[in-house]
Length: 242
Length: 242
DNA sequence: GAGTGGTCTAGACCACATT
DNA sequence: ATGTGGTCTAGACCACTCT
Image (cartoon, rainbow over all chains, first blue to last red; front, side, top):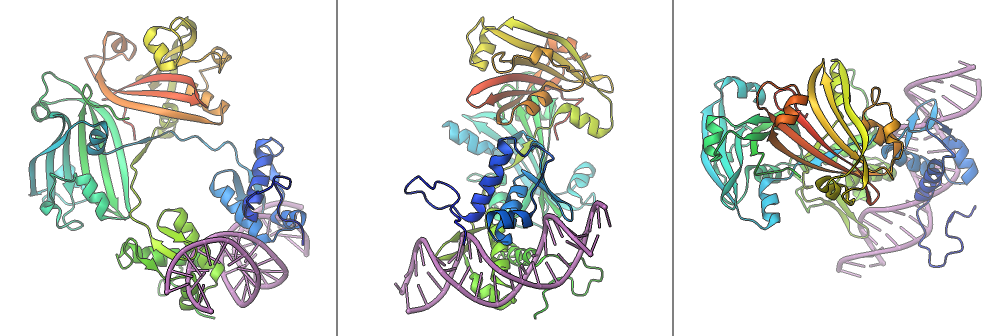
């Protein structure tokens, strides 16, 4: 049997790493050093099995995980290649208002202006993938930080998917928190732009003048059905998304 | 040998899914239906091997991947448990303007209004972690879709970290694309709000009236040093972040 | 036909936790 | 002592690509 402890041979008390991790390090080291540049076809599984004296399943697991992590690209029947620099995706996390405000140590409060069943009108019906006139739950609320309105929320919920939405106690949890805690497999779709306040939003947000607002639309999917759509308005001078 | 094609037995032309994928579906179905709630100890690998007639390595791979994905928690010597609802982080990907526009099939173009070295003034110095008066590279450009300005970019770059920034050809690549292709280990910090256009931005964005703009600030770190800060203005009626 | 990666098995040994 | 998950092997069959 070959010696499988490929590293730290002279360092005492070295915790043994699993073989597949050692294979991953072996490959990563050659990628980082530039020995195996992008597009380079690295040795096949069979070759590594022979050269490293490690079984194919173990080699395969290592290469599969590196592929998953974006370091390699594998083509069946062809070979394994070093991936071009993994594209850096710039992600922004959209945190819940109530959590942000509470984390700041300021006072959070929410006024529910209405929470009711209504026939859905045309535009919202399209967004919810329902027919105009179908019954829909709707909530309309203002979220406040130290009593100053920082967000206006206009939400539609599909009654078939969440029949008890109207019974929830939104003084203690936000609709978002409720929905997230209820369902396991949600996916979200976002859309962001800026718009001026209009007469209605002006009133509910208690604005003095026409104000640039950040508009965040979110559609929440439960599997392949739309559970909820929500439009959130943040006055630009009162709230920043970080 | 048991029949391993656990699904679509009556649907013709069903593409056979790998066994480990079928095991994953089997487990996910029971999580979604609520049959296996959070904290529930699901059957052991040995039990699944017996019940499903599938080898342990295959079962193990399925459970390992579900663990990696956050659905399960495994404790050696104890068992496998359904994970508490993975906190659903709502992420928004900030794509590059030029890529978005090109993907839409519309025409992308960028005007550089200036690209120079200048002494950094107080506010920007704070943001860049430099001293006021230090030399800094600055670029000021307008990004257009079908010749209509959709984004105004005001960027500062640390000359020590990227001495050749001024030599780059920004008619073919954006500063963002250049920076991303140059460095491997960047991290980004974002900040988003809405604001009205002012006299200056009004002019460069060729706006008719005061317009609500989405303001996206980004700081890009190279290790523990700030490589670049940029303020991007998107007129709300011309561009949405999706 | 030869070489590649994708999957799967039936066993094995180990580390760990509980009883 | 028993049961759990973590790793590893030596084979096997398959689908795919290229020559």
